[in-house]
Image (cartoon, rainbow over the protein chains, first blue to last red):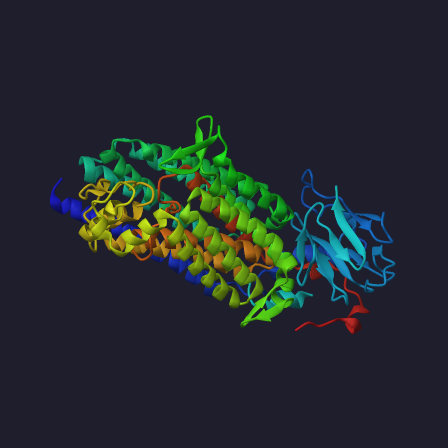
Length: 166
Length: 463
């Protein structure tokens, strides 16, 4: 191997290294500024919202994608004065509160009329606080945004604890 | 509540295509290095470069497909950067193999395969990183047990004077590498619950708000035990890592700069006491300040390794000698602690800076995941895991380039060593999981809800 070839190989390898570094940085850059406005995903969500907005249509059983084994099927109240209430998740979104329209009615002084909601997105379950007075907690953390919950995650509302069950 | 998602400003894209593109470039870095080593050392393209390239590509594709399937919104830069660093490390170790007459690169490739398998397993098994917060105390206990195991009579194993290894059958590994990830989980889980109490309750002593003992006690105890074990084991690098990790996570969770002052003071005191008490700490300081005076000293008390590394990097200069044209094996332990010196010698400052930028990117992406993460546990964990990389790179490369006294730690992904490589891949999997959760757009739950006429009047608008 001539000296020149080795030199060229060395330079070429350093060039590859830096091309990689600069491409990675440019991806970081576009990741920062190239984010999509939230209005864009609306069209793809459209079919689902149409289906949901049709009143009384039995479109709901078809809506959940295939049920994976081990995925939750029930929402249960495990602690508090209403302990024992179990609601099947097929009725999602499930409204929790003291009001009469709530799917899970809690006789708990610390619960708001429309307190929180449990709903599905993809194969994940979310709990969302509906602007309640005393807040919805996962563990000891008060949630401010829709938060994923899994089997056994304890959601605390007032003095009541709810869990997803199989 | 649809307003809450639009207030966030934007939705992250998945960017899996960008990740694949970067992975192809990372493969070029790894395979190009392997071919360049073959040409530089033996004068011919290595015969098995197709098989080697296919193996590397297979590992990258496996990792990429796993990310695509189970963490579609994960950070697009992290995996390629890690793959490129690992590929570069493999090439450099392969080059050292020719002179050392060993087969370390083959074994390192095996470790990388195990690392990628564990990477996939971690991503698949841990669908939500918050599950880990249930194991706060369990993982703390496990970390301490793991740190003690090298001291046990049968399985404990001493290599090069450091009793930090465990041998189970044919597998020899460093439990400390696993312990540092477990400690991050412990710190994050504990601080998530107690950060408010730590930050607000307590009294003020000399500009510093000291928290109450019952808030700080458990975590301080756990940390002191693990640090004590490391000091007894004389593992300076790991002690420094754990100390810095604890300090950074405490600072981030409480938002009190006072912790840095207290921690810095404690570090100075500890370093001074260590200097007085331990002979090997004095040696490290002396060889750092006056390396050329100790070039020919007694074994273990000389600066031969450090000085040879500096010779190598000086000889390499700006663009290096080229693969095979340098003499990096003059440096003892060049394949593990001093791999940066070998890169500096044969690829020059240009490559060393590229590697440093890549490490910077890893840390940046970890902190970015922490910033956009929606839960405290994820934030703290991402900060902790990023800090592990940052501290390790600073301690090792700072030591090799004589910025700070030399302490032994591995350069993640680059240097030879199974436990470190495998656990680094697991850390990256955890970071990807956190960033996947953080970047995933919030579900539009409002659309599913039936519109309620009464709701309009009682709606709470949050700004």
